[in-house]
Image (cartoon, rainbow, N blue to C red; front, side, top):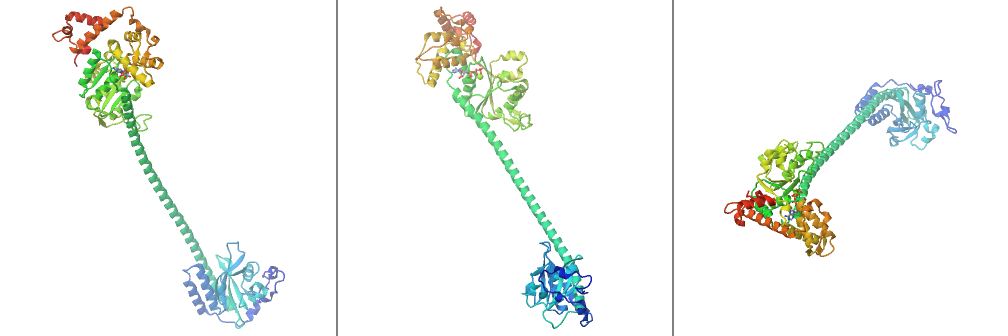
Length: 585
Ligand SMILES: Nc1ncnc2c1ncn2[C@@H]1O[C@H](COP(=O)(O)OP(=O)(O)OP(=O)(O)O)[C@@H](O)[C@H]1O
Ligand SMILES: [Mg+2]
């Protein structure tokens, strides 16, 4: 119901009027309204209006408000009607007009200040108010045409809280508002309020759901993107790992092959010497090379065991394939099995990757197992199996690997003594000793010394960019009489050093470089006797080589030399010649 702005409960409107504002004459007394002719309630009209509002229920809050404005316009027969709402984005400093029907419709979106305006007055007092000529009290209405001759405002509630007003205007004096208009506006306002509230809540809920769905979709998409990225990255890494592994294996193989090739290029050279013992060795090399037999080369250090092993490979049907050399003494016992047979990833601490062994590397070629006497006993068993069955397992592996590899082994140890002492398996020895070759020590082939000296001088002089045409006679004598415990390697080193320090065209050596105990043999006071002994040894060894180690008999060495077999036997013994070296394999 409309109350007078002058009632005792009223807020003093004057208090909110700024200086110079117009008088209160625009606010009409309730009595004035009540004095107007009474009309019976028009429920039919009200029902139609409620149906119109109900029809807008399923729509947006803005449609509800516009429908409300239009029904108010109709039921109150006013010229303009609308809804004012407090702004929310600035803390409620203004009223804005979201919905207007009738003449003022073009002013949708306009508004009034919160603190000095008709809507503010209604909210402050929380009662309906009736104004005449708004523009007289609130001068900012002056430019708005046509003017509001009479204005009826009722509070608009949302969720029980007054958030704005519903208003109706008459722009002329033809008909005035009455109590029935106030009743209708109040009733329609209530229905619109709850509808508006529900729609705002639903909209809010929809917004929240949409936001959550959006966030959920974004999260899902992000997860998908991340999962895809992780999968792609993992696949890439796996592929790279695989490539790296392949490349590493390949590189390792190539490295080894290259190393072997370099070794071969620098080491394979003519086996210099014409002494019968060396000729005997070379004859055996030529015989065994084309076969695939396992060869065991024995002999003192530096006698040329590796050189001979390479010569066998070079003359074999496998010469175009790789020659892989393994020095069993140079590899720690714990690693030798993995070096020979390879290992699987994780086979032991530090086995980070699968690695193929020398046997696999040597596929189709020759493996040279140097210093075989130093092989630990457990690896001897594995080697025995590889020799017998031509297959082995990688360390930590379970499947057998078959290889086609020729084995040449060498040692400077006395394997018989090692077997007797239990350090070397006899079954392995017999497997290796299929075709034995024993390298004669240099002291047993002194006649090779001049040839070897000439060969090494030429080689190192060329390397040093020097011209050395002669060898000092005394030097040669010293070299020939020296015992050469280090054999050809020692001779090679002495010559290399001598060439480096040599400043003339004649090579001399520094005697102090030779071990003195080995020089005891040097007897310069008896050069003829030495010469004779050397010549005798040379002739006997040549005869033994020609007769393949046979002393007696028509084709024996004694017959070739024209002396009795017993005489030859005693000379062989006296000169320390080992006739078994000349025997045919
Ligand atoms: N008859 C030869 N003619 C030329 N050079 C030789 C001859 N014999 C050996 N050599 C050279 O002597 C050096 C030692 O030879 P090699 O390495 O083959 O000996 P080894 O018996 O395997 O020695 P170790 O027992 O110490 O391993 C090598 O540089 C090799 O080229
Ligand atoms: Mg060697």
